[in-house]
Length: 192
Image 1 (cartoon, rainbow, N blue to C red):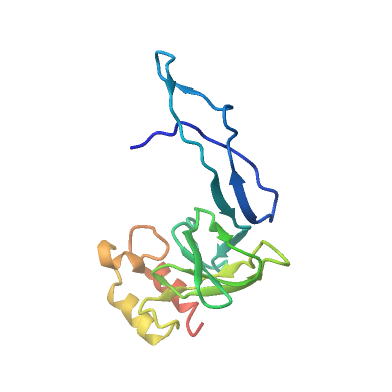
Image 2 (cartoon, rainbow, N blue to C red):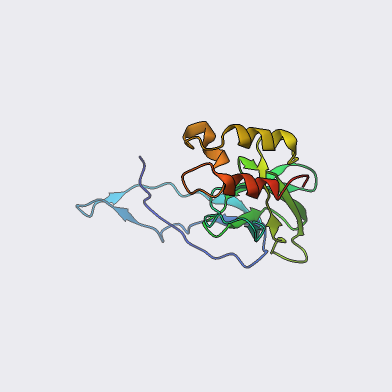
């Protein structure tokens, strides 16, 4: 692994962008080895581009009837208005996330976790840096973006089974068992 001989730190003004060039002056930089003998150096300009970006923050919520306390590991993706994916992250325990928008504009933020219906919110970074809260509904086990009879049947077939491996998505309240509380939580979201 290479180690840096020189580190240059600078601060870019908020929302600033453009090209930066660093050109060291001849004779102003001297490198020496551990015996204080000069090390020859070649000085050349270094150019790089600074791109303005914005931080978009937001949160994922569950309906108040759902008792899951840990909202971590929801996948959050942000798409530019042209449809390109510009960032992705996961939520923390409180359901919060931060994403970097590469430029001002309109974005769609999408949240999802296995067993949950996808939620979306729109944010325009020219106006705000906070995306509207997204309510996610548990129960979309077949990932068809609906919570319907097929999903109820899937959780009913897992009723009172041990929530190991592939069945863990049916333990929606994360209490270590697939029970009536899980079925009721999904039933409350029926047809959402």
